[in-house]
Image (cartoon, rainbow, N blue to C red; front, side, top):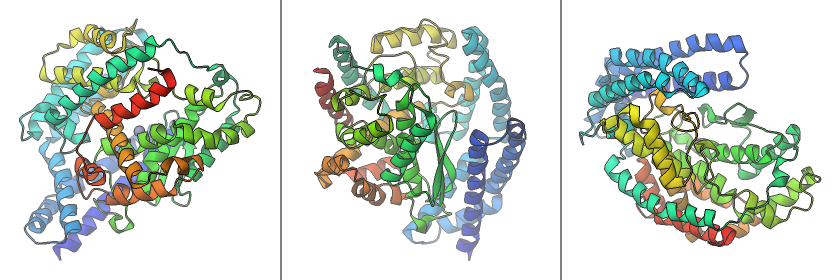
Length: 496
Ligand SMILES: [Zn+2]
C-alpha cells in the first residue's frame, strides 16, 4: 500500500517538473515580452508547490517505511532517488533558500552591468555574498568528505568528488597545453572565407530539421524551435523540446547547435517507457547528459565521414556559397583550433582549458584561498599560461559567464566530464561496431543510436553517471581516450 501512495506522489512531482519544463521552454521561445513578466510569478508558484510537496513529512514517512522493505531493484532505486532529492531540499534551511534568491536577484543585474561596463569592482560585493551563501549551503549539506566543494559539485554531478575530478583534470591540462601550443605553432590557417557568406535563414532551418530527422529525433515526441540560447527542455520522453539559433553569416552555428541539442534530445527521448513519471526517467548527472551532446556534435558531427555524407547535400542547398569548397577544406573549417578569450566560442581542443581555468579558480574561491579581489589577475595569469592569450578586459575575462553570479559553483567541470566520457563511449562503441565510420559515411545513425539507447539512455537513473559509463565502456573515468582522439584527429588536420 505504501508503494502506491509513494508512487502517486512521485508521479505528481514528475508532472510538476514537466509543467515547469514547458513553462520555461515557452518563456524562451514564444512568450510575448509582457507575458514573460507574468511567467516569473507563475513559475515561482509552481516551484513553491513542488517544494512543499517534496518536503512534506508524509513523503518522508513513506520513503522511510519503503526503505525498510524489500522491493524490486527499480522500485528501491526510485525510493533512493526520491530520498536524495528530498534530503537536499530538507537540509538547506528555507531562510537560506530565500536569502539566496534575494542575493541572486541583486547579483544578476550587477553582473550584467559590470560586464557591460567592464567594471569588476561593481560585481565584487555580490560575488562575495554569493560565495558566503554557497559556503553556508555546503555546510548545511555536510558532505561525508567534509569538503565544501563536494557538496556543490554533488548537486550537478552526484557521487563525484573533488578528489576524483582534480587529478583527472590536471592530467588533462598537462596533455592539452602542449597540444594547443603545437597546433598554434604549426602556423596552419584553414580556409574560412566561405563561412562568412550569406546563408538564408529558412534554408539553414531546413538543413537543421533534416539533420534532426536523420539522427533519429522523433518529431512525434518532440519539436525544434528557435531561441536566443540553444537548449533542450520539455516535459518528458514523450515531449522533448530542442532549440537552435541561426545567423545568416555563420552557417555552422545552427548546424552544430542543432546536432548538440539533438544529442541531449535523443537522450531524453531514449528514457525507458517503463520509467515514465518515475525518478528513474532522468539523466544521473549533467556530465553524462553532456557526454551525449558532445558525442553527436564533435565525435560524429565534426568527423570527416559525416561531411562526406552531408557536404554534397548542403552544397545543393547553398550552391553559390559553397562553390569550389572541397571536402578537405570544409572538414578543416569545422575543426579550426584557435585559442580564444570566450568559452562559449571555443573549439573542442581549447574548450577544456577554459573549464580548467574556471574549475581551479572556483575551488580556490570556495575555500577562501583566493580573495575575490584577486580574481581578475589570477584569471589573466591562467589564461596566459594555459591558452597563451590574455583578455584585455574583465568583460572578456572573469565576467563572461553567468554561473557564479547565479550562485552556481561545481557546474563547470561537468562540461569536461562530458567530453571525456564522450570519447570513452565512442571507443567502446567502435569496438562493438568497427564499421561505424561506414555507417556515418552512409548517413546511417540507427545502429549507434540503438547502442546508446541500450547502454546509456534506457538506463535512466538506475545508476550514477560514473557507474553507467563504466558499465557501458568497461572502464572508469579516463583522460587518455579523449586525448588520443584529439591527437590523432589534429595530427591529420594540423600536421602536429
Ligand atoms: Zn549541452
